[in-house]
Length: 177
Image (cartoon, rainbow, N blue to C red):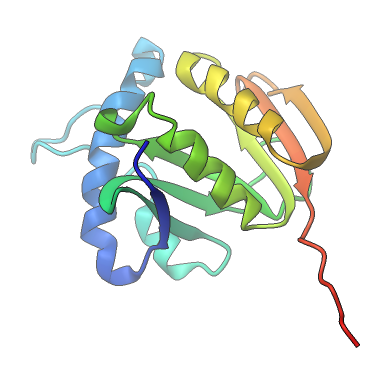
C-alpha cells in the first residue's frame, strides 16, 4: 500500500475539488434509485449538488484531500449536519477514493486517520443502496478507539440507510513537572 497522507483543502484548490466531485457523482449515481439519478447538464458536467462553495465559506465545513504515494487519490468533506437531528461535532458529509486506489486499504487508512485527527461526536450516514459503503464504514468504525457507538436507521424520508454515531476522545496529554 502506498503511504497515505491527508491535506487540508484550501480555496485555491476549488477546481481540483470540483473535478474530483465530477468523478464522485458519476460513481454515486450507481447507488441512486432511477428517479433520483443526477443528470448531466448541457455543459457535459454534473450540477453542483454538493454546494461546494459552502465548504470554502462556512467555518463548520472542511475539505480534505487524500493522497497515496503523493498522488491525488480522493477527498473527504466534513460538516456538522446531523441526519438524525442530534448534536454532532463532525459528519462525514462525503468520502471518495478514485477507482485506481480502491481495494488497497487507502480509503480505510485515510478514513481512520481523518476521524482520529478530529475528536468529538461523529456521525456517518450511508445510503441504503450504497453496498460498498455499507461494508466499508462498519469496518472502519470497528477499527477506531470509539465510545458510545450507536447505529440507527434513517427515518425513510430525510434519510434511508444506517446512521452511525460515535465519540472519538482527544488523546490524553501528559504534564511533566
